[in-house]
Length: 205
Image (cartoon, rainbow, N blue to C red; front, side, top):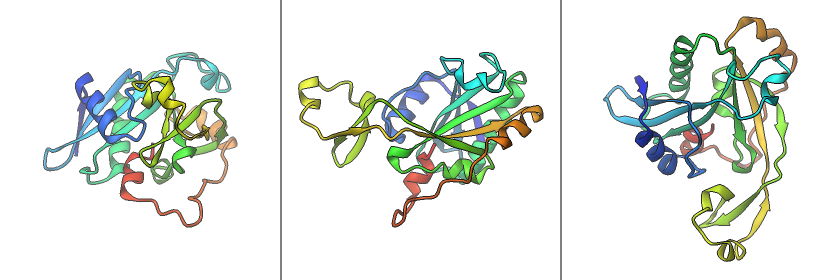
């Protein structure tokens, strides 16, 4: 398996075609993923959060912490957890001053953060959202993924309050390990009766 710097074209295609959100987020650094057959499998994207609150409790200034905001993969990768592990190692090598990784699992998609649990991230809780989702073509969709549709049409769709996110931390600097662990909570589990499909697993980021 091989990762290399991703072009904007690759990021856009993967996010629009392989990720449930169907949006292209801001991306500071992203890697294209290739399997052992040299087939392209999608991208892993990192971004610097726009606010400072994520790092404030760790006494980290902007630029010292970063978010993994997309794992947009098509399922051809041999191991999703290996993709994430390689991406983290590559990112750390190229960005030695970054001390903390942050990522979120979408409660509205019934994502528990399976991939983060499999790679020993620290779960620190859930947050709420003031936004809303629309039910369109059999799925609940983020409002930003439907920006192309007129407001009059969106008003005809069923809506719900957005469910918020489950937050995970991965300290790159050992000095933060104790603090992160002090915030840890038991890993969330899938709701009873819900089966985590391959599609959920490969996109559960």
